[in-house]
Image 1 (cartoon, rainbow, N blue to C red):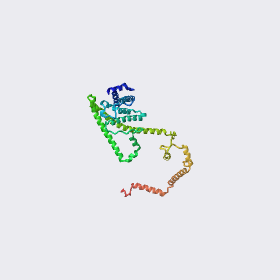
Image 2 (image 1 turned 180 degrees about the vertical axis):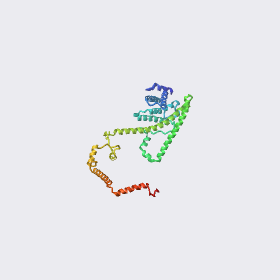
Image 3 (image 1 turned 120 degrees about the horizontal axis):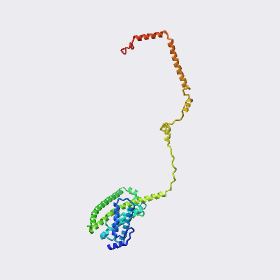
Image 4 (image 1 turned 135 degrees about the vertical axis):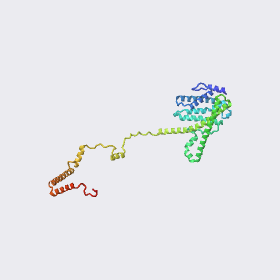
Length: 358
C-alpha cells in the first residue's frame, strides 16, 4: 500500500510545488494552516500566496487519495490502516484554508466551496461512525441550508409558536455548550498525546489515537463553521438583493441648491427688540433741527419763548416793588424795626423759651 501511494505521488503534478509524496503534501498543507492560525501577520500578498499554495498541495493529495481508493463506505473505522487515518482530514483542512481567503467579490463562492468541503468531511466521518453527531441539512440552490431558510421564511410562525420555539432555542444552546465541552476535552487529550508523538515514543496504538482525536476535534470545528457559513451566506444573499434593487431604481434628478433664508420669527424679533447692538444714526443734526423747528419747540420760537419772557417780567416787577418800599418806608415801619433791634440787644437769643429750659 505504501509503495502504491508513493508511485501515485510521483505521477501527480502540483502547479506550485515540486514532486512530493502523499504524506508530505498533507503535512506541508496542514503546517501552512497551523502557521496561518497562529500568525499575527496582516493579510497581504504573502498570505494569499501561502493560502493558494496550501490549497494546491491538499487538492493534489485529495486526488491521490481518490486514485488509491483508500476509503470505502462499506468499511468500519477499525478497518482503516493507522497510516491512512490522517487522510480523512483532507476535506476539513481544505475547507479551513478556503475560509482564510478574503476576496469580497468572491466571498459567497468561497464560503459555499468551504461548506461543501466541510460537508464531505462530516459525511465520511458519519459513515464511519467515528463520533456521535447530527449531520447538518444540505444547502439549497441558493447556497443556504434548508434549516436556515425555513427559519427565515417562517419567522413569524416560529415566534407565534411560543413555548415550542423556546424549547428549540434551549436545546440548541445546550447542544452548543456540550459541543464546546467536548472540544476542550479533545484538545486536552490531544495535547498530551501529541507530546508523546513528538518524542518519537508513539507506537501504533498511540498514533491511531492521535489521528482519531484530530478527526474528532475537526468534527466539532466543522459543525461550528457550517453554522457560521449558513448565517454568512444568508447575509451575503440579502446584500446582493439590496444591490440589485438599488441598481434597478431610477436615478433621481439633481436638486437645485438651497438659497439662504431668514426665519419670520427672527425678523419680527429684530424689528421689535432691536438687532442686539446699538442702532445706527437715522438723521443728521440739520435734519433734527429742521424737524424741531417745524414743530415749534425751539427756544427762539413758539410757546417756550413766551413763557420765558413772562417769568423775566415778574421777577423784575418784584424787584422794583421792593426798591419802592425801601425808599418809601413809613414811620411805623421804622419804629417797629428800631424796637426790635433794641429788644434783641437786651435779651439773649432763646429768651422766654421754657420748652427748651433756656
